[in-house]
Length: 107
Ligand code: FES
Image (tube, rainbow, N blue to C red):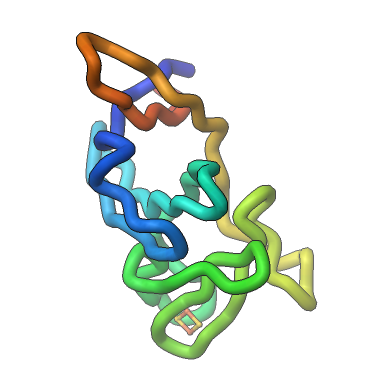
């Protein structure tokens, strides 16, 4: 596992997703009520781009057919057996920049 910088906090918009591709990971980064969440970008329904979605009631909502995945654990709202992988996040301050980091499984 390694903490990896994904973007700056200022690049995120509350309630919206941002796509980040890094180290072979395709990720959706969300800001909701001042907290950052990171999950895989790929929607298990039909491969929608979760980063293109939005936050509703604590869930990242896929823009294709509106499946809602909990920001905290990636579980589909009404069917927790269906899940998107989520990653631990933290803020890291470096030379005045507020970096969003996720703990990614590195070899
Ligand atoms: S592809 Fe995401 S809800 Fe259908």
